[in-house]
Structure formats: C-alpha cells, structure tokens
Length: 122
Image 1 (cartoon, rainbow, N blue to C red):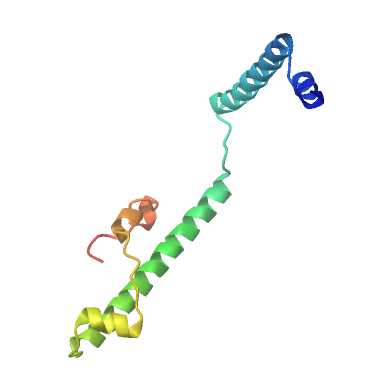
Image 2: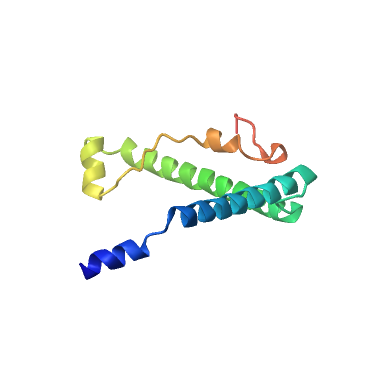
C-alpha cells in the first residue's frame, strides 16, 4: 500500500504535464530558430583553414591507400605467379584474410577537391 501511494505521488498531474510540454516545445522552437537563423545569415560553420586542412589530410590518406594497395598487389602477383599451390590454399596457409567490402578507390577519388584529382589513367 505504501509503495502504491509513493508511486501515485511521484506521477505528474495533467496540468504539470501540459506545463512541461509547453516548456519543452518552447525550448525546441527557440533552439531550432537560432540554428536556422545562423544558417540563413550565412555564417560559415567551418573555417576555410579547417576545410583546407581536412581536404589535405583526405588527399594524403587516399594517396597512401593507393600506394599501399599497389605495393601489395604487385608483391602478391609476383608471389602467386610462381606458386604451384592453389590460391585459396595458399592464402589459408599464410593466414591471409581479405577485407573485401567492394570499395573502389575511384569512388573515394570523386570526393577529392578538383585540383587534387588524378586522372583515371594514372
């Protein structure tokens, strides 16, 4: 009985629920309004220096990825070219696992800034 009374006392009344709802709606509309106002005023959300830094890091990482993938592919082709074993058995024996997710370097290169893109032939 005591627990039931405590539970009922801890619940909000209908008026309290309406007051709280109105307060929360006002907070949400005020917060959204401020964000929208900033965007409408044309405030830059990312500084140009930060943008160039991130773009440069992205370009560097893509170029490292290209180099490492090319090095691995060249080495792997040279190894399996002279291997008499079945390719699947050989990978299993070496403990190699591929993380094939179906990604292509060109799909990421499309996200690079135009001045940093390499042509498809390179």
